[in-house]
Length: 274
Ligand code: C2E
Ligand code: CA
Ligand code: CA
Ligand code: CA
Image (cartoon, rainbow, N blue to C red):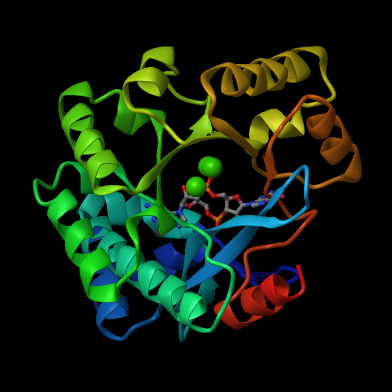
């Protein structure tokens, strides 16, 4: 069953199960997908609250499969994480996002950081930093134009996270704490890892007009202000949310109200007109 979304297909996990049967088969399918270059990145713009200018873009993976159509990450990232396929897939994402960002810079676009989501499995690879360094060198992207999005689950693996994040900061890349407040939030990470961005999870933005929801969002924004960390609200869908978030001092917006994730050519049009 395919449900047609506004811009792309939504594929249910049941479709994937019909095609894949087992994790082992799924792993093979993901292997093929990588070899056949079936993965694509879409890019979602982020806008500054004050100037309304484009602030950055987040790379989000899709699987363009012959039989299934455009598969959303929710349907394959969990299996990719379980099988370990997220490691080569994640490496492809890093390389492709950096390459695309250089292409945009060479086309004369105002340089902006591209954000890439990292999974915990990638952090367990002892050569993560080396790989990122190699990708920056081979693509020619200056490190400050790569932002790595990590989750609290990664940050809480203190033994590995501390060293790796320190090395990444030394390399000059930026770090965003994704889905902030949904995991084991610790204020210590924010301090120890010199985080550049905090992203307020869309679940909190959804609850903005409840007493508790507003209190949580206001607290995260205030924390960002005090620690000098840029706060990004995710999943912004309505003008009322924009107004309220602005009122609370949120720095950057990302969400369907502004734009859905777009293929590279459409993102470039958006960029040209922003
Ligand atoms: P995320 O990192 O929290 O990304 C934000 C998700 O929210 C994206 O879903 C985006 O399309 C969606 N979104 C943005 N604005 C709105 C809005 O206004 N309303 C609603 N309802 N949703 C909005 P997407 O692209 O389906 O990605 C889902 C998740 O899959 C991501 O959540 C991330 O955890 C994971 N993911 C995506 N790409 C990658 C990747 O390259 N590597 C890894 N490891 N994970 C990825
Ligand atoms: Ca993210
Ligand atoms: Ca997020
Ligand atoms: Ca999320």
